[in-house]
Image (cartoon, rainbow, N blue to C red; front, side):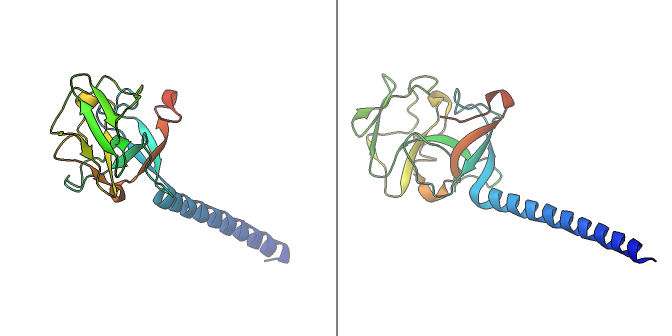
Length: 185
């Protein structure tokens, strides 16, 4: 084999090695991103209608996340089977805040102030097990679905308030369906 043929073979081997290294690095970066920075979530059911619908796909993030009132969060519940999908709800109140709901008018109050909720499907008439007013315990959040009368959430004794540590992340963007792609509020 001539020197020129050996040089071509070595060059080809170097190119293959460089491509393999690039592919491996890309896969590693994507895996790290999806493990520590963002992760996908899917909406099941209609509890967040009209903001989100069943089948919507989201990207969520918990990186440097501190819950804020109005955030849409993904939360698995410790009392639910592991194969059960996580809940997707809106944060209504944070630790130390007091929630009260007037089920006659459907109004939600936090710390004595009526919430402006243009995102809900209809007023909150379904009481479930809620006995208010309720002060949210330290390190927990009170969440409701936007489709209030078709949502299991913090009004239910099964769920109650949620420990902030259970929050998988805040919804940062809807990625599907494509015609609704973009930020979600």
